[in-house]
Each structure stands twice: as structure tokens, then as C-alpha cells.
Image (cartoon, rainbow, N blue to C red; front, side):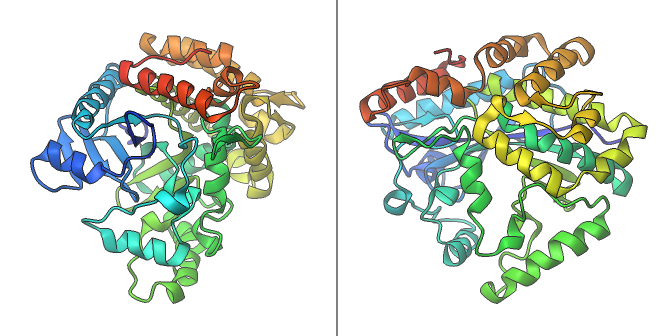
Length: 407
């Protein structure tokens, strides 16, 4: 089986002015300096640096699918440090978390202006990218491979069940334009709505219950392509990557890409979360008897849990007994997402051999909560520009040094 023999990880970070922490649209200059010429990608051994939709975001991704977790966080960390060294010459640095805390996208958004710019211009023409939902979203993507319909169906069923709970681990975006909104994961709230002009693009974020390529094409791709066609007469966006659900099938490369994980304060935190997610998905897939129950989970069941979790993170309460049973909590009528993940992390540690390097980040998550909660705790009663700036400078230092943030 292809499942879990390999996986891919992508981490996105903001480029900011090192002095002010305002967004710095310099990804093109950074990539050109690294590559020695104008470029949208720079392959730096095991990690490739890439541009994104906007010019103040840089993505680091595994150049080839990885086969083991051991040492991977350190490889990402070395690339972060190299990028920061190059950014010094541009007066900038990398900033973690899933949203810039005071960016005004209506004023500051700059699209990537070079290779593939026609794609970004098409998105901008149709959706207007001068909003947080396009210009201020940084995430981790976890890519899990499959071969054929049977593997795809099992993988998709397992991912759909886990997806609503992921903000409880990964929420890192509590602040928008200098204020707390009351949501733990504002990135996902904006993501949920950023393509509402063409509703079929993101659907309800939780993917529809389809478990083979033909059904996926019929239920997701074709309705999406048909709905956007009047706005995209040249067919520029008629590709699988237009799909903006929380987990998207990439049949062109045989993988499902999980997209609902906020980026953390350092790669070790991201990779620790990814390892737990992969172990949990594998646990669900390995149980043959569980497949019918996983496939029976509806969007109507899962979406309210997802919305509760993006709002309350690890404090959100799951009352869906069918989902709890699928996750191994038989007979429980309600549990918080924090309780669920606490149990699943411990299981992964004991049964799946989570690398020792991930145990300290997971301990911080278990004891202190997701990064969003830790940010809120540090800023309690002092949410002003000066205090936010001090905290996010500390977070930038956490990224530069590869350290967890503990309030």
C-alpha cells in the first residue's frame, strides 16, 4: 500500500519588516537572491522555497515526499534560519502564526507579480484578494498519498472524521487588525468565506462524503468548474487546485492535502502536530470494520463541530456519539476536543512511536493549549499595538531559534 509510506509537508510564513513587523512584500527579491536569478522556486536540498499568492508570504515544502519524521523539523528549521539571514539584507525577517495581527489587506495586499501571475490575477478579478481570506492566511499543509480508489476512499473517510477537530491542536490566529475577535482560529473563519461568491469552490470546508475518483469528479470537480466557468472564460482556474475544501484530493499527484492546520511558532511544533494527525488517520484506516461508519459521517454532522472548534479550539465540546465512537471513545456522550486530543496524543506516543523530539512540543500543547490560547493568555487585558508588537516579536524569535512559546 502507498498509504503512509511517504508524506509531504508545507509551511507558510509572513515576510515582515524587521523593525516595524509590518508586512514586507519581498518574496520575489528573497527568492531571486537565493536562486541567483528571478525565480518562483528555490530548491535547497530537501526543502524547496516557493512563492504564494501574495508577495509577503514564503512557503517551505519538502522537495520530495518524506519517509520519516526524524530530523525533518531540524531540516525545516535550518531553512528558516537561512531565509532569515538572507532577509536581513532586505531589512526583513519571517513571522509565524496564521495571520498577521494588524495587517490591513485592503491597503497592503500585493499579488505575486511574476511567473504564474495570470492565475493570481484571475483569482483577484473574480474574488478580490484585498481581504484577509486571501492576503493574510498562513497554514501548514499535510499531504498524504494514495493509489487507486480503494486507498483513496479509506484515506478520505478517515481524514473527513479528523478534520473538524484539527483547530483544537493548531489554532494560532486569535487577533485580526489589532483586536481579539473571540475566535481561536480566525484564519479558518476567513478561509470558510473567502470564495463565497462561487460557493462550490470551498463547499462547506468539510468535504462531501465521496470515496472514489469518479464520484469526486461528479460531485465536487464538475459542479465547481461549471459554477466558476462564467467568471473564468479562458479556463485558467479549471484545475484541481481550485478546490478549497479543508482537505482536497489531488488525483494529478495521488495525494490528499489537509489544509485546516494553522502554522505554528516553529517547525518542531508543526511537525509534532502533523505526526499526531498522521498517526490518528492511520488508526482510523487500519480498522476495516470502521470504514462503513466513517463513510456514513455527513457534512451536516461534521461541519458544526468544525465551526465550534475553530471558535473555541480545545474547549469545544463534541456531542456527536457517532463521531466519538469512530474515534474510539465508545459510550461517551460528550467530550471536549482537548480531551479527545489528549487521549489520542498519548495513544500515538505509546503505540505509534512518535519521535522523542516531538514530545516537548506536544507537552506544551497538552499543558498550555494551542498557540492561539497562549497568545490570548499573554495579552490578557493588554491588547494594544505596543503589547501585540512585543509579543509577535517574541514569536518571531521563537521561529528564528526553533523554540516553543510559553506565556
